[in-house]
Length: 444
Image: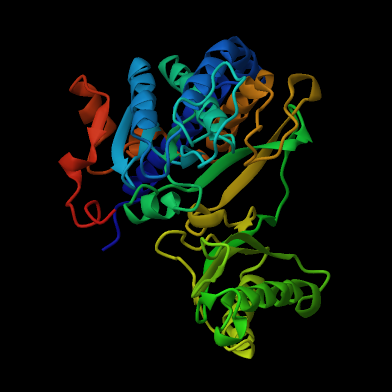
């Protein structure tokens, strides 16, 4: 049955009014939202605070999946600004929530440190012997926390466009694939896009770099064990020397990239560790060496992986030895290439992502050493720029993709723990233990 004519017209008028109200709402929201210039101005005022946070994180570096002190500090800072968060994800990770409704955007930082001994002479030197923030993760956390502070204050002033911002604090970036475990635990649910930033000591301080397409190589770690028959070094003819076999295999592997892949492609096979015997006069039973392969495409990586698996046993056999390859996937999961168009490692296999580089090279500040160097440091004067860029990316994305009032949907906090429920209780913490069914969390 058709409805009366006046009912049809009434419905059309109501739809038009709803559309007009929605358009006005969005226009007002956008007009009140922050401009990039205003965000930068406010970020400059936070420069001292951001620098302080970076130095405090630098003092207490922790291994992947063990970032408990780091997480506790992040929690305190979030609570200081009444930011709701949920934990644990991937053992020591957490996610903070700002705003409500759709679209939903993510900002991401890493948390873990490297097994590197920092030299003396740094005022805020690592207090955890044998560990150091030598890849800039201390700065990443400080900048993202600065952005969080900016965004939360903007939310309280009614300056944020409709939508939700999730801030991911990811553990175990240095080989543990903490991002993949966070995704498996559901942290990325409903997220529509994600942004991340990494400091780069070879780029001019304060400059920002990115590009469409592949921006970082994928990586696989491997360990090769060459087995022979040990004995006295004075009688090598009675032994089967795995040291010579391992040396021959290492040399042969260097031809995989130089002679078996296109010079227009991009791949790297690096041997970074080598362990044999402990005595000067004893030929050992076995030799272990390991390293990484890296490539800008999955196909390139898989080719190098295949060739290593083929060459290890055959080259070792030429010396009378055996060889096995362990890809260590349980300890060092596969990192796919980072592609800025639609992919960004683990996160970007799920949602569109972009990775940007922030230059921190400044000769006068001594910020000239490479990532993973025990002498690595950064030009702290640009930390506020990183915070401003994170905040601006979030605000501008929400402006560009907001389509409805935030009251229509609830997506800021996880479905199992709405932001309103956590806020009304006076507690800014949402513990996964209270809402998770335990099937995934225990495993992680």
